[in-house]
Length: 296
Ligand code: NAP
Image 1 (spheres, rainbow, N blue to C red):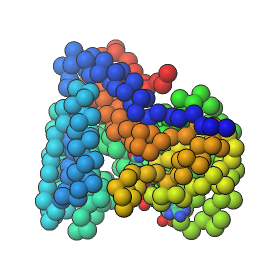
Image 2: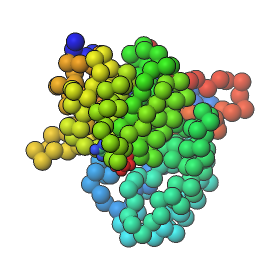
Image 3: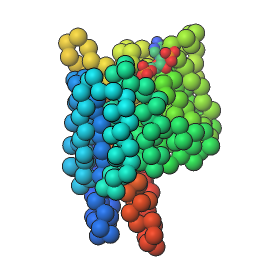
Image 4: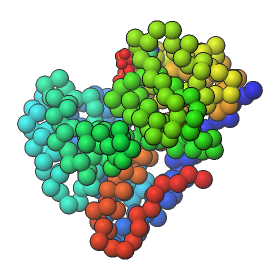
């Protein structure tokens, strides 16, 4: 068996066509959706991620407001900037690029963002919403994975889903979203004994560990759907995921490439959440119904 490729880049582009139409409708209602991005310090990877987000905004007609603070900025300064953005009517989404420098308490910063502008979905309110299946903004990476899974046409309900990685931003919310779709979910992490014993049972295998080559063909069930969230830069500068793509492709039914799989979807779902926020705020009093994302 050779797996079919789940093309995140193509799906992103399809979704963005719909986004531009939604932006046009918002503008007709006098609303320009806006995303504020706060970058503290000059971490090169963070700069690239912020650059990609700003570009995606421009591509979809969303206004972006870039707030760069020095690496030695205090927590008070960051909180003051967030308070300012919480109150700014032109800003529908606020994103604080992680990681933050050590003098700043990440949790305190994330909790300061207005939950109605928390387009990354990292505020405790939105995280808690995931537990009861009713979050305002699903976190972007798992949200993107969910749409990628939908493109396979396979119903998640009743499937064995194994998530490798238990971080707050990817693994845990991913597991909750799969549970909400009625999958039987297993979460693995660095302390999991005999990882293969779990992954081999997966009908759906989602890998987000940040370890290149972690998942090899012997660990994958024939016909599994494999989603590789990992992004790792090798010493020769190549970007790879956590899955041995060439090997696993021979056993899986569907697989995401790296790059070109989950990565483009993460940025696209950030725009989706920003539009949803603008639609909730901007046209809440109209009879107009906010569209929901669909995948065709
Ligand atoms: P993270 O915070 O470092 O979490 C990694 C998780 O993987 C932890 O739960 C860790 O377990 C687990 N883990 C580490 N080694 C393992 C092993 N050998 N076996 C099983 N589990 C293991 O990372 P993250 O932020 O979730 O990101 C994970 C990867 O996804 C990274 O490569 C990151 O660059 C990538 N990423 C990609 C996107 C995208 O858009 N494509 C978005 C976000 C992240 P413990 O909890 O026990 O430490």
